[in-house]
Length: 621
Image (cartoon, rainbow, N blue to C red; front, top):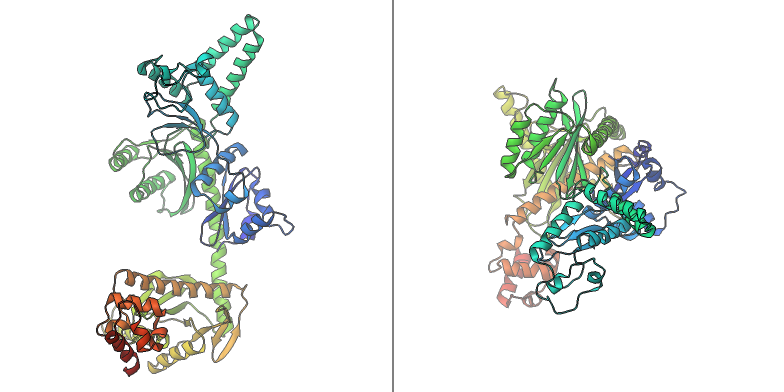
């Protein structure tokens, strides 16, 4: 369970990005902060004044997470990347939805153009960025026109060659007019290659050239021209900014770092795609006794990349691993091209790995605190339920649910909780065999009978054949049976147990007018329970899990065409008529009450088929 008040206390006073999730674990908002501690807390202060839209957002927040960065600028770029990747609902409503600009070069054209782009598309163009300054991008495009004389027009070349006069940029010596055939395709391509080299980060030559021109203009007392070169140099330097969050354009890499404490470890993975950090994930690992971090990282790589469909060209680690070359060969065989595992020691890459490590340490510390806290809560919740029911101890709880939809075959589910935690290996599914139509009480009676008869038989086999205590899937009986309904469901369960001579406590859930649980039914009385208590929250989780498991099973059977409808037993009613009847009457109840005339008016039905359906429901004993 995520407890917002407790998580707020752990926020660091550091720059970074925070990510808000709703109850479906959908990202609904991404924001940046100079101080995560101060910014995120503002959303949950009683005296907050956020406006209607943000108030609506805050009401939907179920949990939040964050990524620590080294500067607000890094947080700014990372925020943009995450928003583009996840498209959170409330970012588009509450924030300026501008995108950081790219520089686009249309290399797929015969005479490529350079332009500003607000997003990357899957075309043949090359993109550089994103950049944090739109003004700097504009200046660089102007600079490249002066240095490389590439076109910026939208003319279709060579189709439109010679159809119009050259534009202004030709006359001011910022374009070589390929639209007039004044430059060959080959010569133009050389200029394009030089431009791509410049945009790829090779700025030294151009900065040197600009500096020489600035000094020459200054020596010739052309101070205005010298100032222009100075300003252009500053623009080049500005677009050459490389924060850790924005790496070389076009590169795909994973940055992996781990934090360890005793036999627990957290591996943090940062995903860089097209040179941008677009997301991260962390993995909680139990390490083998005596295993060091290098060995654990090696094990992680093998497991992680065996199950992921995408392998980047570079994987950056915080320390050397023994089998690096072997792993590179394995990754290369999976990807079909070379994969490099590196251990950065300096510069931007080393700082990226360090950032991943710091986030891994933070996650590990918080996970250990959370696990300890949740264990205390679940044990406390079980004790609370035991006290409410006057029981000494509850180790194992079994809960049951029935699922049926519009008369299709019912199924049952059994979920198991031990010490307040789900034990999924003991979950069981039941296809109802003896009950026709939707009858939850009769279906529940069948499920409980089958469950305990099976268990009793296994216990007898274990005793007679001296088998291990772990023998059988139904051998262990619960300390408490939990029914989704109230008095009726409890009485069904008690009747089954009495018939089988079993003494197991049974409780049910009492619902209010809105079908919400308000208390427990136990020993012929309703026991109220606070909705804010940990015991109530555990009961709700068990109830939801039993319902989910039953619905999931029913859905899987329907998808395989294995469910049975009572209409299957009516002669002359095939799939088309069955579907039309269920759609027209909205279920079995409407069908039962329909007259022959009403039935015959349904699409694909005739009087004879209508009579068959009517007699089935009204003559069946």
